[in-house]
Image: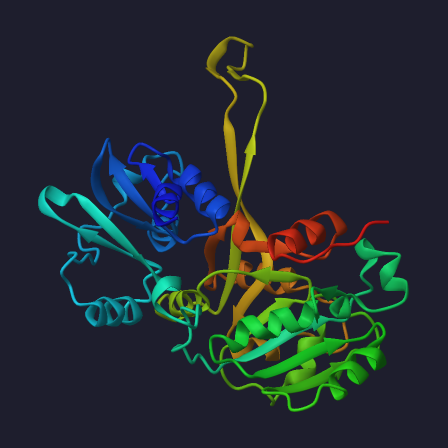
Length: 360
């Protein structure tokens, strides 16, 4: 069984960064083993790829160009307690056991050594979280004619509870939820949850105010950097790494982007002004960074939200850019962003998480 797992996370050093990201999504891992022929080279983590993207590296370069030289490894005779201590200290999903001539002897997997499969259990960000849950859920009709989108079940929990769970895993327990459509139903739902392990406050728009307009209602209530999340997305990435990126780069606002890959099924042509062919590319693949609807925001920006006016968070971002202020973008893989606000993607996510979906 372990041999199959090792094989499933092994790639050749010639694989491109974008294909390595796809491979991580396919096997639901954040780390891979990189080989050159049968010779073990190193671990490739999602963090390595994210740093490459932030440094403007081409996603079509081979992974060999971004491998670190100081990745942690052990030998087969390393005591198990030392292995566990190392994995826990560096939150390592996998830890290779390497022998003579860098031969891969074995791989330790986190889930085999720790009862709690949560790599983030020691993280305590303790930041407020704002969840934007005031929309009509038009993409999920007819069900949203009856219940609001945040309460649509995903397994045995609601969408919004899955979002809250992910934040609680990194020590965030103070939630503000912007509501409008069917707000009373959402309020009743949370009132009915007994012994909540988090604090939650619902604040209500009197009219639809866009994806950021209601934030002006939080003036004086939030005095630290805070997360903002749409109510119909799940982000499966390192929230601690996102926050560190935000702080280390002194961003006023950080957007999380998903790398979307679009293969073109035809050869593409580039021509000069007089129609002469200059270049031909057979079946290229285009990569874009897509806004996921997940942000970190500095608290002073609340004061820049107009009062009682329709205002998207993209309007705020455009304002910051016009004023030459700093907006960061932190990339994650396509599979780490689950958009559960439309039925096709909702059903894909349900299957991925082992739940049943809906059919109409």
